[in-house]
Amino acid sequence: MKTNNENANSDESFDSSDCYPSRVVTGDPIPVGEYVLDELEAREWSIEFAASRLGPEPVNQCWLELVCTVEIWQQHEIKFGDAEAAMLETIFGVSKETWINLHNAYETQKSAERN
Image 1: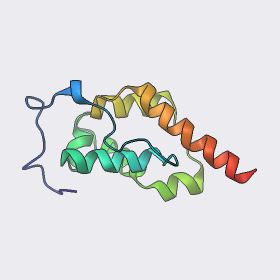
Image 2 (image 1 turned 90 degrees about the vertical axis):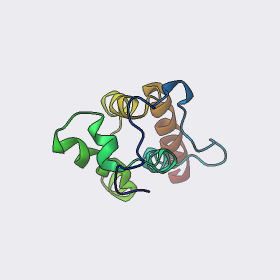
Image 3 (image 1 turned 120 degrees about the horizontal axis):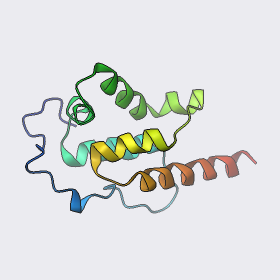
Image 4 (image 1 turned 90 degrees about the horizontal axis):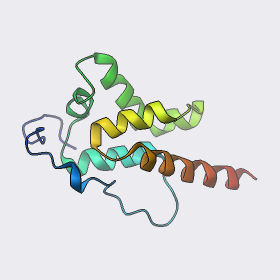
């Protein structure tokens, strides 16, 4: 993943019609944070650039870094819902329903493994 924004897509070159999480959804579901990391890498976006699509507030970058830290989400069972999915929709142009479905598939698998 690039750490600078030199090659990051600008709004002018961003085509949201091609948006879909870049990892093909096959096999076992994975945490949303892993999909986010895949999207950042596929688009050659830094976390800083992606977070700036939400606005200039530093909390946006902190939130996105937290989303990408899968272990923290798993350890503390942080909730992922409509608000978080809507923020990812704003960043990537992928519908919030898609993010919620990805999260629910992962949670369903985790629950089944515990039982």
